Length: 326
Image (cartoon, rainbow, N blue to C red; front, top):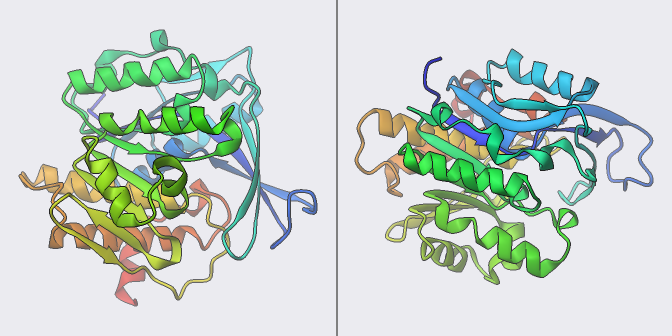
């Protein structure tokens, strides 16, 4: 197999998205099945943008797990190390969303198969020749997947991969706030690139602004931090150069699940392009990064116009066509 551009590890699940607008899960009258899970969304997003992505994780040996494998296979995401567990069910998530972007979300995961990935189910050879390893904080929240994630990070570093981290806060998946903060913060020192959202940094880092958030994360070792600000765009910093970049506000938002993951995929795609061109400043927050983040903002905006995370992922052509008229 040819080497992969990015290997993603973590949760792959089914999002059941409410068909009703501006209601809670209690009031929802029906749901639409959609494939999701943040790291899987990133892998799928990269594939839609024309990159070679692989996904490491675990689903149940059940119809939902078979469906999710087919979704990734159809997108040409490599699933060699997507394990089907005969003793656990595929994780489900039920999502209702309001127009202000606030989501009512509940996970069926007690335990879900994604929590049960083991270190011995990894193969160091799989990481050979890849450029990035991407993971999120959810896989740091339970054993044995936490140990598997740390082992994958170790394998990635030994093979010279760069590391991308999304401190994806889902408080309902943690036993308490102290544990959540400790484990999520433990992920930052491993990373070269971090994407964090405006809704997350106050709780995770105790910061009160994108600037202080980026400063705190950069002090832990990453080279580049991007703070997504929803309809306000994003803030970026490499510790020397920093700035705000507006997004596109003239889209009809249907559902925002996966928009941040789409942004991550597009950002990594742009950085990888710089690396392949031999750019020694691939993490520099310069004009080239502004172009990358403009593309990522557009991709994230497009992802909000359809229901579901993976079904809404745009292609490079979709994003370029969007930018051509915006």
